[in-house]
Amino acid sequence: MRRAVFPGSFDPITLGHENIIRRAIPMFDEIVIAIGVNGSKKSMFTLDQRIEMLTRVFSNAASVNVETFSGLTVRFCEKVKAEWMLRGVRNGADFEYERTIAQMTKKLNPSLETVILFTDPEFAPISSTVVRDILANGGDVSSFVPKAVLDFV
Image 1 (spheres, one colour):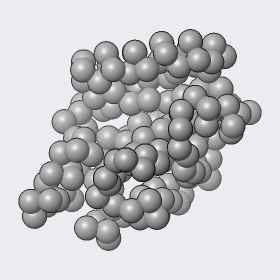
Image 2 (cartoon, helix red, strand yellow; image 1 turned 90 degrees about the horizontal axis):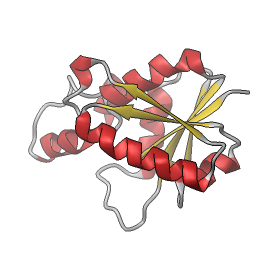
Image 3 (cartoon, helix red, strand yellow; image 1 turned 180 degrees about the horizontal axis):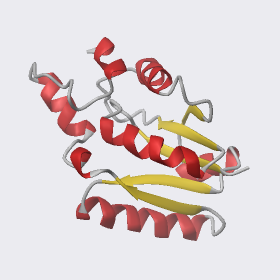
Image 4 (cartoon, one colour; image 1 turned 90 degrees about the vertical axis):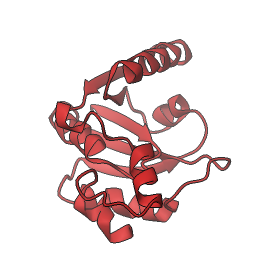
């Protein structure tokens, strides 16, 4: 089985995240969206809300599952027997960061491959950080997030 893990905080999921996952569906038998839990990081949305958002967005994709984890992403990949880690890149800065993560992942587990997809250009400027800032200041995020997210704002 070709299983990939797409890790992130998804606070909230953006159209860019959705774009990467939907384009990756044909590449894998299963994609596990792995919501990383970091107790020292303050999230805008609760873990339950993020699980529900992701579950709603991918309710029509049988090969996409949502799970949570804490600790090293590479250990979670091993736990769920994933052979690939899926990552998305919006720009050059993202690429440099993701290249470093991929190389470190390879050192920690040589059999775990990283697959990097570039988001479609129209989603490149969207980030969860910017979406949270817009929300915190009363702005409209409807053109940056999947419709299911709007039920939580």
